[in-house]
Amino acid sequence: MSEVENTVVDLCRAARAAGKLLALAPTDAKNDALTRAAALLRQNAPQILSANRDDVAAGREAGLTGALIDRLTLNEDRIDGVAEGLVQIAALEDPVGETIQSWRRPNGLEISQVRIPIGVVGIIYESRPNVTADAAALCLKSGNAVVLKGGKEAIRTNTAIARVLATAIAEAGLPADAVRLIESTERAATRTLLKQSEYIDVIVPRGGPRLIEAITSESSIPVIQHYAGVCHVYVDSEADLAMAQRIAVNAKVQRPGVCNAMETLLVHASVAEAFLPTAAAELQRCGVELRGCARTQALVASAKTATEEDWSTEYLDLILSVRVVDDLGQAIEHIGRYGTGHSDAIVTDSYANAAAFTRSVDSAAVYVNASTRFTDGFMFGFGAEVGISTNRLHARGPMGLRNLTTYKYVVRGSGQIRE
View 1 (cartoon, rainbow, N blue to C red):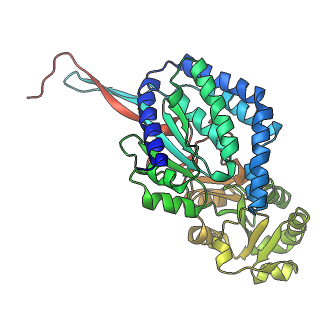
View 2 (cartoon, rainbow, N blue to C red; view 1 turned 180 degrees about the vertical axis):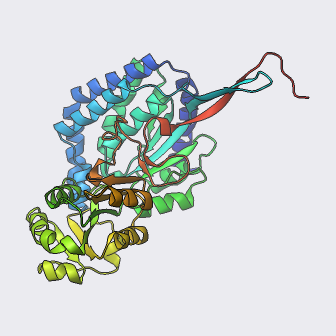
View 3 (tube, helix red, strand yellow; view 1 turned 60 degrees about the vertical axis):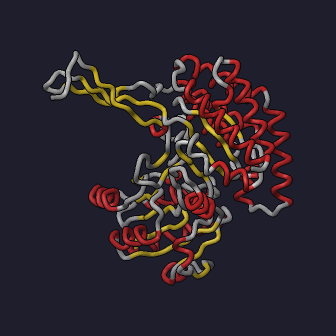
């Protein structure tokens, strides 16, 4: 094996050993590590920001899009937000050891289903250095060791953050190898990580569809997938149009380069004339390029023609597809055909229409009268998230602490034997 491959194998082996110790760590020690990490992130903000400026400069030189630069960029407020997320995770109830359910059999056996850590989690991600801290903190609190593999565009920032976390973990008396960052940017490092089924229990990828497809095809370890976030907001015939405009603008503009941003706006034909011109003007004032169906273009002359490809595109940018639909059924049909099972919203004052939408739209998060931008572990009260799963097995939606556990059965008897 090459030096890079040997390094990755050694790192994964060390994480497995550390994970066995971390699984038994008391809650107080894990919380101490998290609060220390939050304080050290704030104290080391100048060094982290210096590393981040170098990453951003390199990203601009490499031609990264504005949305990717936004994902990559840290500032003092964002670092403070990451630190606050760690504090919030420390304040959450520790899921390890929680009894999910218990029962007594007729023969006197007492059976309990008890939460335990998964073991070692591998996380592969692009662009967003806050993931380094968020993912590490969630894994730490849930008793899992974690091996982190960030993208090359954030390598300096990720390394600076990971070193802060390692210091905090060691100061709290926990095994420093419980959080490890692969510092190599070579593809061989990722390929090697994906083959370490002896040491890694699950892979969580965070990035675009191509990254996730590549990881899924190459990995010998189970993968929790998060494909594209083609998210929709549907403005119903019974919608409060002022509310609908606020939600639509927020869902698209507040942070367009993230997976829970709206990519397609659907508008009921009966309110399109009253809603679209005003909403389109506000979206365009915010810099959004509109691509619409023929009925949209009849109401918004500046809208470009939407192609078939547009309906299934995750822009991650200030571009929005707009379609006028005949009714709720057509909106649901459109979402079912082009959506990715991530986050979709209806704006309506009709209880019946809201109920039909939430029942029929099969997405990880379905909203009534709220922005899709809330699909986020922090916003859901999870403290942070290790990712947003569109899988059906094990976890779906924002993956917080409990999604990073599995369980075992503890069976207590008084001498029972099976006849």
